[in-house]
Length: 420
Image (tube, rainbow, N blue to C red):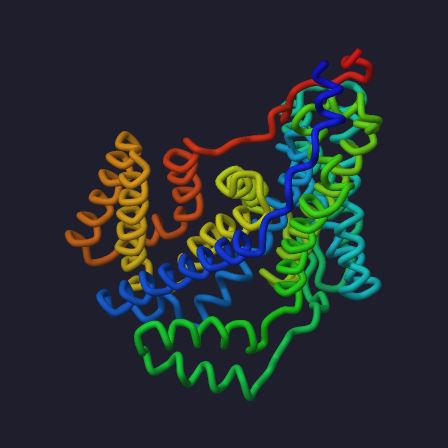
């Protein structure tokens, strides 16, 4: 009976132009509001480094590996496969990026990193989809295998190379950079005037047009590509159906195994590209263990982004920004406390408007704690600055997951023929 209803029910009407315009208007207001908050904090604290051109560039570069891991997790989990192995796939990608770039250049290195990540995705798919291994167990095992395999491969292949060693390979050619001097220099001059909001917006423009890696633009394009494929195509609809109700998808003729395999392999490709970013954009070469848990942070960004590409991009940007802040001066890191406090107060007001008093009190209490910390201190210990990405991860997962909805069949075992 339920199958007949599913097949004969008319499709939902497409969103009206006014609804799409309303969503665009809402996101525009959110962007302007966030820019106003950052600019206000900058003016109040006097910490101009909080959103300087250098800070924004560092934040964008730090965001990309996390965002690629988040997109990888999104592809897998939308098909119903939990991919804890993102960290291991990213580690494999770092070796693939270094090896193929050394011999063939950065563009072949990009393909090599993607292929190494895909190998990790295939291993995870075989274990979880074909043999039904618990997804968490398979992911943890993949992380261990990835770290061990790369340590062995680095010692075996990089030890005797120029710039190489048993744990590193430096002197690699990097991908091209985008530089628009007339626009970037003008925007940088405007940013240096420290005008309210105008200079902050100019800093963003300057960061994107002054010696910025082309990979940042490619990662942004992959966000839009993911959103289009998963939500605007028949392929994406079928893939997401495998993560919501694979039994119903099977009755409609969807080969659930194939879609799960494709999704997990693509997930590995994205994670491998995250490793490429770490080797050739975020740093000056390959070093074993350089992922630093970013695969796990990407998984947290995906969750906080509610399993959606633009939500994951926003969360990854927040994590990347906190990661970049540890490289800034002490005043900028201290001002970050005030920024966090203000944002928490905004979330408190939103929860009050929605009638969610319990979470409003929780957000407000944490916001007050950060405000008191800012008012009673002159600087943040350097050790804490290095912990900010991980503290932000815990804070987001503790406070921001109450209203999230994961795919209904995410992580659940599936066997062909269950629908019958």
